[in-house]
Length: 90
Image (cartoon, rainbow, N blue to C red; front, side, top):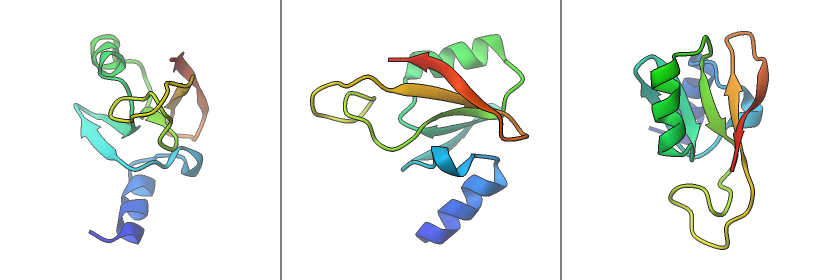
């Protein structure tokens, strides 16, 4: 799949452009964008909030799968109408 096709897929599944990252996954009805920690995905699937998904924009150091010195980063929730807010900070 080409990069522009990946962007189209992200748009199709409702990921706000400011949250675009390197990975997109569909998990039990939710969209996971970027390096979202596994425990937050577990929490999402357990609590089942009325959101489209969670995203971590970019590739912040210290996020799952990234090396380097850990730095604080936000995990952002997003809705179908494009509303976003910080779901968790790490």
